[in-house]
Image 1 (cartoon, rainbow, N blue to C red):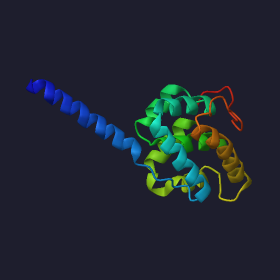
Image 2: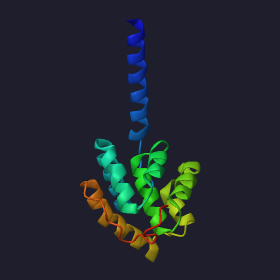
Image 3: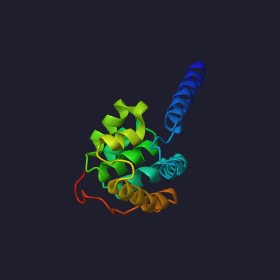
Image 4: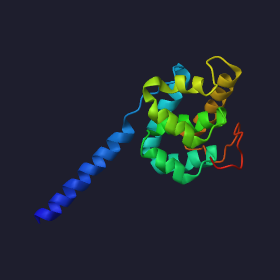
Length: 157
């Protein structure tokens, strides 16, 4: 009986720590509109992580196992931003995730700038526009199949 309670306690403790990992999220792009979109997408993802996963895979044309790996180290809002920046900066999703993971303290705004998406630039406005169109669908659960703005169509990142 003690072993059953101990096993149950361990499973509950592990589940709580896993959940806590994906709940902590602060949008760090520096643009209030994008930060609000990412926060909304993140909060919606917490309600149905499977739908979020599937939407990121189909919206950004990223292999599911890469999204799974990213979910182990980043919050859903960060994964969404990594996917969008991957498309906008024409960089592999894995590279964006690794770079951000190693430099989280700089925030997404600095990461975007380092990858050639400068604030106020045409590339920044194109990324923001793309996020608006995808983000509205993502947060309402309708993000499947929208590859607009994906320069790497057909290529798995």
